[in-house]
Image 1: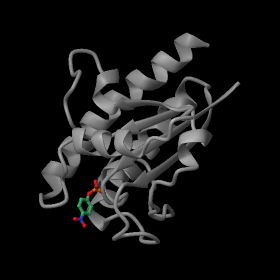
Image 2: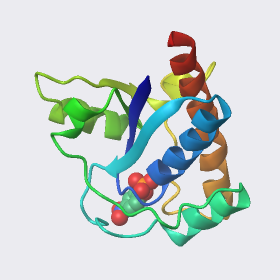
Image 3: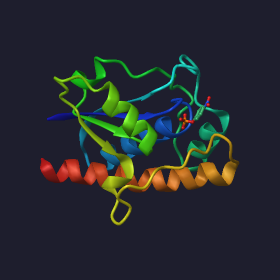
Length: 155
Ligand code: 4NP
């Protein structure tokens, strides 16, 4: 069985590309067949590569996200994905407002999948420095690992 997962932040150039990469690594580790993507609620960065600081943070952690390109969430995503995972509470609220009545996806917050971190956001590192991007990666990895393990346990 293939599970499909979409990660959503604001710009799709910092946090959600990192989440896409972190979840891809965890899915491979657990031998989970997964269709993985990311998107932004906003449209300012559509077509752009991830922020160079996000690319550098990914690279420090052994993953390449340079090939990714930003896109905006679409109505079709709610029917296409099994899971849509918001990076913070603003993204979650925007997704719930956009959600069509016939939504197929299960919508959740990334850190709800990490032990003891329920309800916490992945802080937006956009106005921060490399330390903030490294912290974002660490937290994103916790959520991605928990989500992948929950999905693998469901079968
Ligand atoms: P992201 O970060 O939502 O993690 O991709 C941001 C990227 C761009 C902006 C804000 C947050 N912006 O205001 O352009």
